[in-house]
Amino acid sequence: MTEPRSTLVSLDDTPWYHVVSRCVRRAFLCGHDAHTGRSFEHRRGWIADRIKQLASVFAIDIAAYAVMSNHFHIVVRVDDTRVQGLGRDEALSRWTQLFAGPTLVQRYLADAERLGQAEIELVDAWAETYRSRLADLSWFMRVLNESIARQANAEDGVTGRFWEGRFKSQALLDEQAVLTAMAYVDLNPIRAGIADTPERSDYTSVAERTDLLLRLAMDDDPQTCGSPSIDAADSTKGCMRRSYRIARAVGHQWRADPQDAESLNPEWALNRLPGAPLMPFDATGRTEPAVPFGFEDYLQLVEATGRVIREDKRGFIDGATPPLLVRLGIDPDQFILTSSRLLRQFGSVVGTPGRITARCDARQTRYLRGIGAARKLFPNHAA
Image (cartoon, rainbow, N blue to C red; front, side):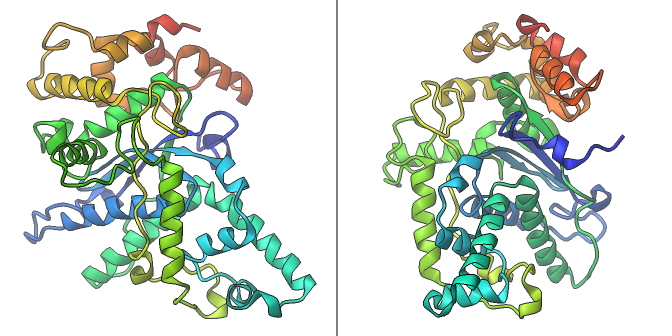
């Protein structure tokens, strides 16, 4: 039975989510069209760029992503506490980078001193609405999918659906679930047979991170913002503040018709948004927000699992279980299996048996799909 989005995405349970969106009829609308011979690979770049551009506006951090020929995956962390500190002007300015906003908001941004007290109170109400939307995964996905669909339809000269429907999401209830989902996402190209190694997996977060490390090692890019190292000069929050100042300097050049307050801004306006960096890694907990693992350990795990998937062998090739699996109490063989079957093994939640059982109790339901897989994958965390 279909569940309401409010129960699928509950920040009271977890801020971490695995999100999937597929092209209509699973057609290769972002890949190679075998019938016409046309290649739409460049659209994968559109999606990867737009994900990071929207992360600079929303209070949503990107931990992992993979853009394939007919679908994409994202692992996100929704930071609702970040929007609580946004002032009126910043909340309005962020949102109107995406949507024109009602006439009253446009008047306020143009000249706030000309508004009366009653109008200012109405603007405050809009600002509060925008704060909640900036920490809303559904709004993030709406803007992402709508903007890509408009570009693709314009390029093809057609109208109609580009995505098959609303996005699918899985709540990641603990560190074990976050690690499993991130590895599943980053290994997508290897699993599909279109890449041999993680660093050659185009349009994935693991390839972007390894490329950044290589550029930093060669001193070609002194900017460390978004580096997976915990010694990065700037945290994700600092980068977002800097991105906001850049976007603010662009100005509110787009002004839609007053009747189109909720119409998404045109692509040229969205393309001017700066891209936010990926979440940094930090196993010590000193950086917030951060992926709660060491990047070297994560990369070792992804590379080892990728070799197993590529060579179709059982168990890790070097015979040594990656340290992350040992620390988190994850069964190695089941991890390899899940790295190819996460969406089939688990339903709307991923986590240790104890966390899934607690989620059942909170929802007052007897069963959630995945409890059996969780008992095998996380044997040291039995409910």
